[in-house]
Image 1 (tube, each protein chain N blue to C red):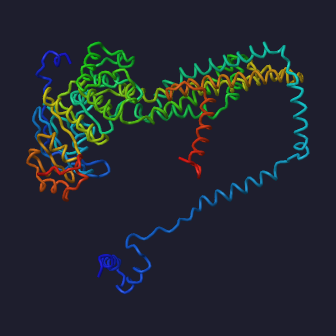
Image 2: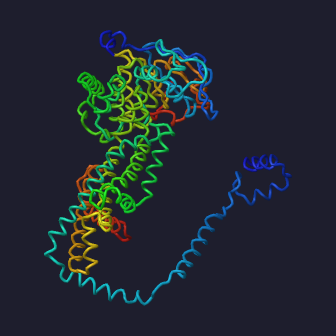
Image 3: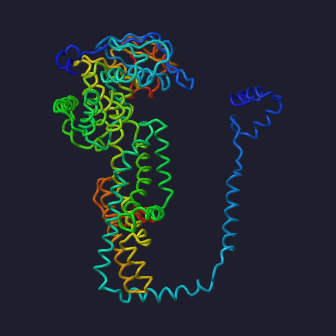
Length: 321
Length: 273
């Protein structure tokens, strides 16, 4: 008797089966060991798929789609684009630029206030620094602030502070507190535990562990989040202008109302160019903070593309390498 | 701190005594059982055993990172059990620790990492601003000189190789002016030549400064070579306690529960005569 059949014997008798049945089982299962698992049926997944398919189909039929308008769209779009950009109102450029700068200033001011308020709050919300009874209320505040869009915050504040750029900045500040607070405590909690253990083992107090065990490793991420939030705020401030908080959004609405399309075209150009420039500069600093390299985001994107192509060519069949 | 500077004798090693020590984790797992040990001031002790044998638990019990559930540990003249808050931090400040994965704050400078060893003796406002005192910076530089890595003082910790990072970690422990250094598998993430460099550093610190050193080692040849005294753990119990030189093959079999293989030694050659 081989060692394998002997161990199979022992298995079978242990399970209380008659010894005769064991020979058969041994032939079928080449490997004596735990039984192979059956493929699990994922009911929940199937139900989710079916329900979401039904919802999509139902939504498609229930919405009154005007197919004719859809067909007319390309033609109308071309016409309005022509009115806006052929040519844009160049004489409106200085006004457009100063309105955009007001929007950017609104975003900058709002984000700064958001940073100053959210930073200590995110420390209060971090696990390991504060007990749950402090953490959860603060997290609740962050969650509520994130749930309310900046526009709604601004509308709610209108009655108190009036329709000014300051209202817009405050709305952005409140919105920033929600996102920055959450990003802050999440990066504090996700740092490598090693330095925390080392600081604790050296006899550091809770605050000291936070300062030297947590902060050095969380710092680059937190700075990058601040910049990223500024980029978001720039976009949000344009939208806040639409409800009258001043800046580029307000100028846009005013000109659309009076159908001055060439000025609208000029505004679009300025908004898009300024926003992209801010994104690139902010991205440049973020990349520098996190990876230590000075590189424009658009440059790294292009480089990744060409690097990918080079790799594909190098590994292609028939290549000499 | 002041007394340490005045009285050099106080910097020499502390004794460590285990009396019927047991550790049961909250999930019911027994980490240590009935451990009785007496480690003398200035000894260098190597602890060997399989993973899960309780090596890390034993080392972490000495500075209270793992709370003991039975018996008593005495470091110097401080009884560990029941110690908390300021008095526990005081004890920890006198016990330096070196970890398997170095545990540096990677995104700050080497010197800042070493100065983390001074946290217990630093005022809160200095800690927050990173405004270290001149004396502490000098102490940190001396610690870096001892492990021969002072030229990297202002480099980012993440730029260093594994062996360099571990030496920075040793300097951090030294900056505490400790009476005991605990090293938890300090060579497990390093290649063989670097392992010897790190172990020699620990050996010199033990010999020249008289600091008690307790080091967990996975590899038997390292343990025999660097541990004057060898303690074998198996299933949370001490199964061998004696000079490293007297630990022959039968001793290792009792620690490991099997005969030796090439995987148990760092340098792939037989260690047991």
